[in-house]
Structure formats: structure tokens, C-alpha cells
Length: 440
Image (cartoon, rainbow, N blue to C red; front, top):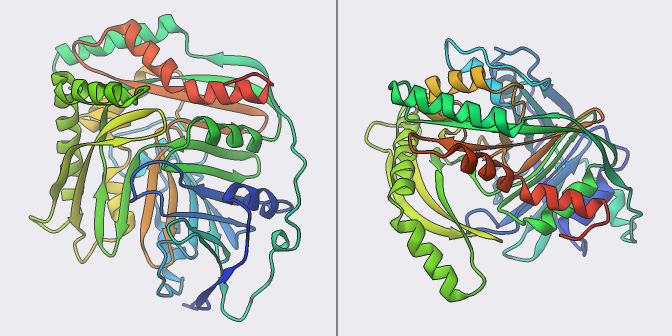
């Protein structure tokens, strides 16, 4: 198989933010991406990446199509040693129904999106936030100068506005679903099921304007704008799905949330309350156990461990209870195997995962599409970093979809679970209001 040229990089003098640089880089390209980091622990905020005009685009067109196409493409990449976690490779999204390829007996609806959509990039920008430096990577011997270096003037903003809400989940239907799940849990079918609701709107204008507002309202460890033409995925997610770096796979289950608080005393009080909440602790431990079992499918026996349990991480508006589960991949497994083992996350499906997904499919009125799937990259070096696609919006043609879910357990109150879904869409709703000329 023909190998690709080595990838090289060099420092560039660029005084634009990642979002400003991307706004210029994307012009005239058929596809592009922006992966930003803003808030969270040091493990997630070290770098931002952006690129445009991929060499090719991979799409999973069949509901049961696996990742063979992805493996074939990545096998031909050069894998140039790199000091950065990403310096070329595949970037995009994986829809929730991709799980049909990994789990027998499932027939999850697509929601009108491919099972995955990934661009193959051999050039782009790397923002090293810890060193306050910017680098341009490209194939050796093929250096060109992106037009954004030549003109750093202001860009003219395009409008973005919603026209109408065409469909969505009604509160009464959602609460009926919660009661149904509670009955199934009582019958012993599951321990937890994450039921979601959606909104569908028609819109006009440039969805990137919505992303710019969202990154102001809800800065997060994983902020992303993925443009594939007719389809776009944008969001601001706090939650890692799985990372693979040098054969170590790591996942970070999040369960347990409290407001950050207006001052230090309130922050500490909210933290103590969260850590003492027996219901939240029990749900968290269940999801940690699920993560351990998932990684155990692809890691060396005895290597899977809970490196951190119920650590509190602070974000722009909230604090979460987060654990870290890691393991060493077996010699016959790679990053895509680790991804398949944990996909989709238990925090957006439930436990036991297979049964929870079957219940979700029977109760939700529309396929999830990218919601509750993953976004991120697979590098030329074989490493991977993916976030769970939550706190997001999904564009297909002139329609935009918003979606959020809540974990249903035996003592769930239907009205409260519905309000939790509404609350989780709060940042996107505030961003939409800003696009319409309102305040946050």
C-alpha cells in the first residue's frame, strides 16, 4: 500500500483566536472542522485544532456498516512521530446508531444522519494553549500559505435565526415514557435508562453564528464545529467518551452535577451536598462499573483500574463528579476497538446497556442521529480523543435539532426528569436567543 508523505510542522505568527482563524479558513471549502478547548481540567484544555478542505470524506451509509472503511484509510497513513496529540488524520462525528455495528440484536434508527462522517486532513493549525504558540502542519515538501495568514482583518458576520419549531417531544409524552421505564425497572429489565427528548426547527443563515454564541455562554473542555456541507454538528460538551494515547485507553464517567455557586462558600456547600448524595453516588458507581467492564473487553487482563473515583471537576457554570477508568490495550487491539467497546457511553444509554438501548428505541419518537454519539479525531499516529455529543445542535439541510436526556431510575419523578432535559438545553437556548438579538 502506498504510504503518505511525512507530516511536518512549523511555528507561525498568528494573532487570531482559534474561532477567528477558523472563520477565515473555512471559506470556500467543502468541509472543515474546529475543535476547541476552553474550560475544564488540564487534560482537556491543552490544544485546539482546525482544518479545511479534507483529502476525502468517509461516510457510513448503512445502519450496520462498521468501521472497516476507517481502518482501511488509516492503515495507509504515515504516522509521523509528533509532539502533539493530533497532527493529521480523521476528524468528525459518530452517530448513536453506529452501535448497530457493535452490538448484535439492535436495530437503532438513524434520525436521517450517516452512522459516521469523517474528514481526512493532512494540513491545519494547532494551538498549543499551554505554550501560547500556534503551529501549521502540512505534508513535507507541500507547504502552502493559508489565506488567513494574509488577511487578519475583521469578518462580516452572517445572520442566524430560527423560523419555526416544526416538531419535538411533548412534556406529557416524555413523562409517560418515564413512567413506562420505571415499570420496566420494577420488573427487573434494567437499572437505569437514559430517555431523551428533542426539538426540531427550521432556520435561516449561518449556524456558525450559533456556535460563536454557544462558546461564550457555555465554554467547555470539548467545543466543536464540524461542517460537512448539508450536515453540521456543533456543541460544547463537558464529557470525554474515550481517549487512547500510546495504547492506554481512558474513559471519564460523569454522574453527579451541582451549580458552581456564586461564591466560595456556596461552591463548597454544593460540592459537599453532591458528594453526600447517596442516589448520585450509587448511579456514579454503577456507571464506573460499566466503564470497567467495557474497557475489560479490549484491555490486558488485570490492567483496568479506577485511577480516580468521584473527583470533583469545575466548569464554567457547574461542577461534576468525575471518575477516571483506564487500561492497557491488548496487543491485538487498537484505538478503534477501544472506541467500539465503550460506544455509546453508559451515561447516555443506561445499564445494562444493551437492554437500555432497546427500551430507548421503543420509546423515543425519532432516531437520535449524532446525539449521544461521539465527536473527535483519530490521529495518523493511531491515537484517539472523543467526546460524548451532548449540549449540542445538529444541522441537516435547513433543519436544526436539539436533544437532551435524563437518567431514569426507580425513584425518578417524571416532572423533574423532564425539567432536567429542559435545563440541559439551557445553554443552547440562550445562544439561540443571543442570535435573535436577545440577552443571555
